[in-house]
Amino acid sequence: MADGRTNGGVTGGTVEPRDWLKSSLALLSMIGFLGTIYLLSVHEVKEGARDIIMVLTGVMAGIAKDVYSYFFGSSAKGNSGE
Image 1 (cartoon, rainbow, N blue to C red):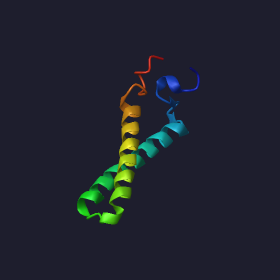
Image 2: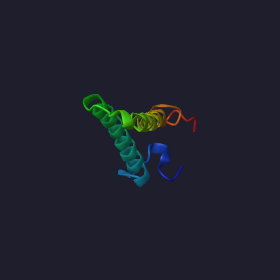
Image 3: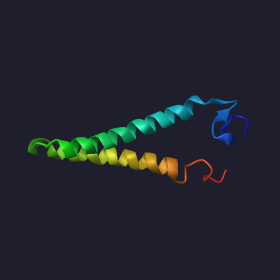
Image 4: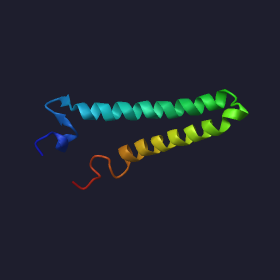
């Protein structure tokens, strides 16, 4: 391919904007998930907010799972069979 995807998104020493954006969003979501887990372990959750906190924690866990499976699963570069 002539658009730079054959060598990991690097064309002439520069990184395509989509690559750093994907990585930045993935890093941000992982930091958010780990931060949520840390805050839940440090602070006590009030009984009235427990349900919404558990739902939001589940959503953050789903996002972290999607990021992990994208970067290390079948979508990872080199594993896609292209």
